[in-house]
Image 1: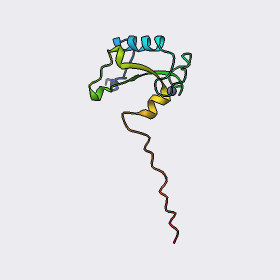
Image 2 (image 1 turned 30 degrees about the vertical axis):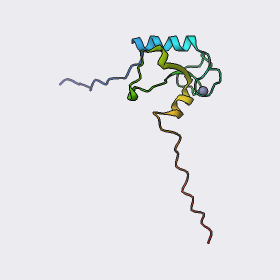
Image 3 (image 1 turned 120 degrees about the vertical axis):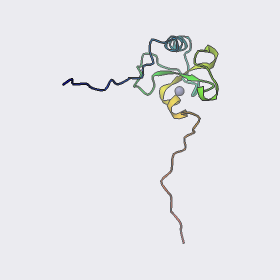
Length: 100
Ligand SMILES: [Zn+2]
């Protein structure tokens, strides 16, 4: 019997035109567009301060990944905390400090 394992598709973000443009943005820009601080480009992806490319206009709003003017440099964590338009809305532990 064939021992077939399901072919898992890994999402790859490299090797596409987007990857190149991304690299270009990272090469051309030096500061994070979100916090304004310099980005250390020697840091690699899983690192929180590694360089990422942020879209000024997100894809969901019709922005393009291929438009250089729509792209800007950002820290990974700055970009992540910005999310897809969702602001840091963390639930604060329910404060039930009612004083009677
Ligand atoms: Zn930043």
